[in-house]
Length: 227
Image 1 (cartoon, rainbow, N blue to C red):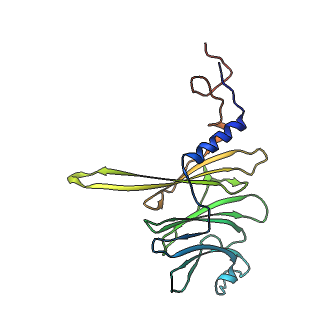
Image 2: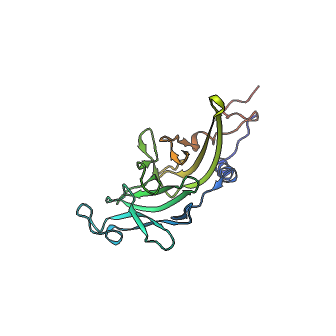
Image 3: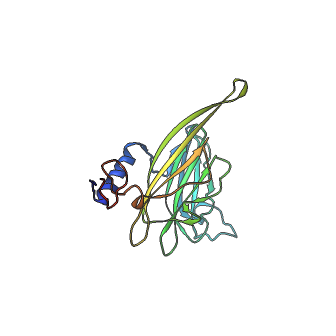
C-alpha cells in the first residue's frame, strides 16, 4: 500500500524541517566584528559613496562595505563586481567573529529579467573572487530572496608524532524558488572551512527529489503496490 501526500503539504514539511534543524541566519546588512567594530553594507549610487573615478559613472548603483571602529575614521571599500549597470538588491552580511571574515550575499538585478545571487568573502583587507549561485555553470534565477539557515561543525585529524589538525566548517543553507513560470524549489549548501569558501556547491531541486510520494517502507513511491 502506498501512502500519498499532496506535494504542497510535503513542501511545507520540508521547509519546517529545514527551519527546525538549523539556526536561522540573521539576514541583515550590518554586523559586529570580533573587535566590536561595526560593519555594514550600503547600496547607493557610486558618486554618493566615493570620489569621482574616470572609469565609473557616478550614477551607477553599487555596494560599499563599511567598517567603523569607535573613535576612528570610517573605512569604506567598493564591493567588487557591483560597478556595472545591474542593480544590487537585498545585501546580507554574515560575520564569522572567530576568523574575522565576512560573507556578503546580494542579488544582482538587471534592468529586465530575474535576479541572480552573488556572494564573496572579505577579511578586512582582501576580497575573494565573486561567486554566483549556479548549476553546471548556469546562473540560477531567483524569484525572491532565499531563506538562509546556518550550521557549524568541527573535526580533528590525528597526524604523526602526536600532532592534531583541527578544522571548523560553517554551512549556509539556502532555500529558494526559481523565477520560471512553473516554480521549482531549490536547496544549496554553501561550505566555508576556516572562514573560506570551498569553491563549489551542489544544487538540489526539491520538487523532483525530496517531494516524491513516500511508501509504507520509507522508500519513494511509484504506481505499484508491494505484494
